[in-house]
Image (tube, rainbow, N blue to C red):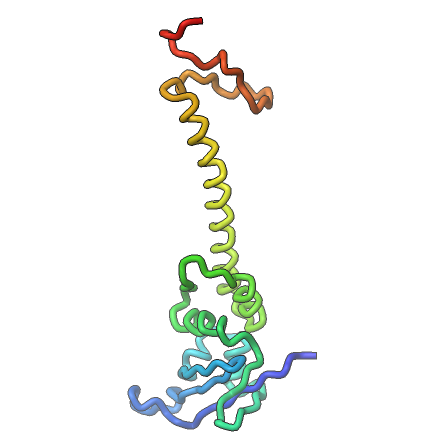
Length: 174
């Protein structure tokens, strides 16, 4: 069973573009958050749920103000709508609701949005791993000091340690 989607289509034409039939303004109530966009923005990615809504292929009820109502996360829809406008995912640094945004992208059928979210998540994981190892490398280099270049190369024996006696300069007293 498909989820209920409530959407209203305003017959108000966008005055700034000359009022052509494709420039109709769409007013949306998504999870209680109100958005205004144009029909071409909603039609920008064919095959998506938003495209189907804007083209009239999916019935969406209206609220008492005439807004289309979509019973989804209203906060996350901001990023969905901006993605439709720019074809780029732009979220604030440290945005913590990427899992929600990914799910919203799936719901609307925006595969490129889902991929962009996955890329951000993977990038954050890589940076986190790098910080962990980066800290260990800084500790190692601080303990080894100038003699870091004297450490033997990995010979493939899978030993993940070395003895302190291997570290020393030619000037050290044995």
